[in-house]
Structure formats: structure tokens, C-alpha cells
Amino acid sequence: MGQFRIVDAGFMTTVQDLGRYGYQQYGVSVSGAMDYVAAKLANILVGNDENEGLLEATMIGPKIEFLDAAVIAITGGDMQPVINGVSLNLNKSISVNKGDSLTFRGMKKGLRSYIAFTGGIDVPVVMGSKSTFLKAQIGGYEGRALRAGDILSTGLVNNVQFGREIAENYYDYGSGKVELRVVLGPQDDAFTENGIENFFNSEFRVTNNCDRMGYTLEGENIEHKDGADIISDGISMGAIQVPNSGNLIIMMADRQTTGGYTKIANVITADLPKIAQAKPGDVITFKKSTLEEAHMLFKELENRIDEVKIQLYAQAKNKTEATKAKMVKIYNITVNGTSYGVKVEEL
Amino acid sequence: MCEKAKYLISGDCALNMEFGSNISEEVNKKIRAMALSIEVKALHGIVEMVPTYRSLMIHYDPLKVDFYELVNTLKKIEQNLDNIVLPAPEVIEIPTLYGGDCGPDLENVASYNNITVEEVVEIHASKEYLIYMLGFTPGFPYLGGMDTRIATPRLQTPRSRIPGGSVGIAGEQTGIYPVSSPGGWQLIGRTPIKLFDPHRKNPILLKSGNYIKFKSINEEEYKKIENELDNGNYEHIIYPKKDGVN
Image (cartoon, rainbow over the protein chains, first blue to last red):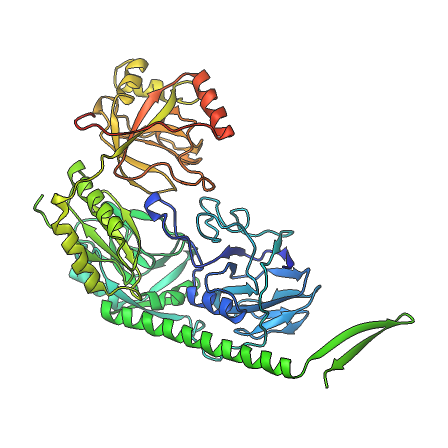
């Protein structure tokens, strides 16, 4: 167990895991990490369960002071993390010392970074999840985004892992152009041929209205046959709503569970991280996919994540064995007021 | 009951079974029957279900269940819906203090409909309202079947904060605000009952397919229930719905 202090919370930093399931029928949003792939990888890097609580930082990163030593990993969008003035690699687990300070130089690629801590974040599990649901003020740290002065605790550590690294790039977040593959439905028949054609053949731009609830895009008008209103039904992650204004809204982690607007299509699960990392001004295009292809791509992605897990555990195991073979300990010894670092090596 | 459900693809992790084109108790009964049948069978790979006015959204995990297999299983269950015996829906009593500070628009509703305040309360508290669905905010019920004699349009200017537990009317709908939020409903009363409490064993009190019955209480009773809730010894009044009562 250790603690860290939020010196500055950045633009918006919340505790998330992979979401709160089982309560959508009661009107409780799923929440959870917007970029679930980055969140899983961060947790895997520090030896946690994939679904552990971690920090999701948006646009401007926080400043964190470590009150105890810890092992952390940062994934997702590149906000140029720095420890005590030295740049950090993304997708690598590193060991930090008591008194170290984590800051971010600024967003270079993507929009959201994930910071995982070995042992996870020790916040209460509310309705089965550590995720913060801002609108209902539940979960996470006191049901809200973090603020300067907050002190958070990490969970129990069984097995500290650092030096683990993922070489592979899962997504290229930075190009400013995002192609999203979609499966049509459930209300694609509510649109004219012209409307469907505009949807697939024109470019849309991410507006400033892109939060955890949804991404509003502007672009060509998507024409309805007979209005945008339907009798309210369920909304899945990545559903693309088309209200009467003609703008599109891609429904994200904190979306309402139900809604009364037509949904033309749904972003496939494997492409959700791309939209979660898109920022205002980015250009979005939609490409038609099939259910079969969507399921195949999702399975491939999960298999890749499983492979990374196996590789990292193997790395960690080799390391542990190497350490066992040759125990090296460093002691700080003070003699007559002078400190010495003494390295003791097993023979 | 011969109309077949439509199976609509809602992305690669959800499908929507649509049981009709309108809002009716009949359609809602089918949805409740379908959801209960799926629950009893504990189908592999189903993450959760969301019943709404005329459809049932089924969130599934494509890594655990094949879509087409799932649809086949669901179709078999659907064919058998008319033969299953459902437990009676539950009616939950919502003690409500009408008028005064708790219901600042009660007189509006009365004068708009040319009836007395007492008549509004009597009409409002006389019926068992079907909970069609929950949504909008945690625990917010969409209720059906309000008497049109007390129907009143929304306020011209919405209030910026409506206290949790407020009971209101909007057009031909009645409802309860589970938590404090902005809104334009005509407020006629307030209940001390907590529809949403994230730290309770059952965080949400209501369930779609069940019914609500409002009961008029006085200020003393309101305070008594509030105390009991604080001390954790209040017992909700819940009973099985009798056929034909409405």
C-alpha cells in the first residue's frame, strides 16, 4: 500500500475501471475507461487485473507527487510524461520513488492517457465498479473528478513488476484523421438513401462537445425519412445518434442508457479507442463493416492483448529468476554523519 | 399475441428485440415475459438487458456467444412466451406528501383542470401506474396510465433544481425525480422514499414491469418515515398486483 497526492488535477482526471455493468436497466450508465484497450494494457503492464481502477487523464495531464514508492505505467494518448524532469516512455512499467513528481509536458497525440499503479487504486467499489460516474456522482474518488490536494491510496501489492514494455502500437492516434468502421442499425431504415450516402461518403469534424457522454460531430446533413424521434430504446456504446439538427452524436462511456433519437449505425468495438482518442477538429469518416467482420476484429484484438499478457508474464518470470540467482541489495548506511550507498552482492 | 419481435442489430455487442410499434401494457407484458425467461435460463454470454417501452436491448459478449446461436435461442424462447406463467408484478407504495412546499404546483394543476386540490390528490393516488422503463437518470421511472383529468403542460420556465423525491406531472405523464436535478415538471408532492441509494443492497427500488401506487400522507407521517429511513428500520410496502385492479 502506498499513497500519492494530486498537486494539480489537469483538465479532468477521474478514476475508472472497465465499467459498471448490470444496472443499465435501472438507468445507471456503464461509465469506465473511454479507451478500454489502453486501460487494459496499463493494468497488465503493472501486473494488475485488467479491470483494476486507474486514472484517466483528459487533454491536460495532472501533476502527481508520490508519497511512497510505486510502480506505474502510462498508456493511451501521448501527453509527454516526465518524472523529476526526465521524459518517460509510454507503454512501459517503471519504478518511482517516494518524493518523485510526475508531470506532463502536453498533449502530443490522442486525448486521453491512462496511469496505472501496481496494486490498483484503493477506492470503494460502488455497485460492482470503481468507475466514476460524474452525472450521478457515484464511484471513483468521492464520485467526482480529482482535485488538487486529493490523496489517493494504492491497493495491496502482491508482486511488483517494472521494466515491462509493450513494443507494439495498437492504434495511431495522432494523425487527425480517423476512419471508424461501423455496423448499420438499429434504425438505419429511418434514413433516406441520400442520408445513408452522406453518412458514408462525407467527412465529419469533431466539435468541442466531446466528453465522456458523447462526441458531437458536424458535417453534411443526414436526412431522415420521417423525423428523428423514436419511442425511447436502449443505447449501446458507440451508437451513432442522429437528432433533427442533423449533427451526429457518438454515444460513449457515460451515455444515457436509453434515448429517443434514431441511431443510424454503431462504431465497432475494435474501433472505439480511435474515437475515444479523437480531439476537437479531427476529421472522421465512416466505413461500412459487417457484424461478422466486427466480431472477428474484436476477437483478434483480445487475442493480441492476451498474447501481450503472456509475453509480459514471461519477461517478469525471467527477471525474477535472474534476481533469485544473484541477489543484489543496496543499503543506505550513515557513518559519522555521511551517507553511503552500499551494494551487497550474494556470492 | 402473434406479432413476432424484430431482431435489430445494435452494434457488435448488443441487439434489440422490438416487440411492437406502440406503447401499450400488452407489449410491455411481452418484454417482461421475455426478460424473465432469459433470466431464468441464465443464458451464457448475456451481459445485461435493458427493457424499454417496446423493446428489450440485450447486451452480449461476442467472445462468449455466437450472435446467430444467440438469436436462435432467443427465437425459441419467444415462440414459447404465451405458455409461460409469470409471477404477478409487484406494486410498491410511494407515501407522498402532497401540496405545500413539497408540491408548489398542486394548485396550478387543480385550476388548470378546473377541479379542487383534493380531487387532484384523490385522482393521482387512486391508480396503480405501470413502470414501463427506467432511464434518464438512475432510478427515474417512465410511468403509464395517468388520468387525463389531471394532465397539465410542463412549466414554461424549468426550475434549475428540483429536490430528489419530488412527484410531478408533465402533460399526460406522472413521475418521481430520484435525485435532485433541473426540470420543468409541475410539482405536486414529495416522497421521503429514496428511489436511488448506491450504497443500499438494492440500489434502485423500482423495476420495469412493476407498478407504483402513491399514498397521500401528512407532514407527521412524512417525518416518521424519514426518521425510520435514517435509522434503517423503514419497511417498504410491497404487494403482488391483483388482476383487474388499476
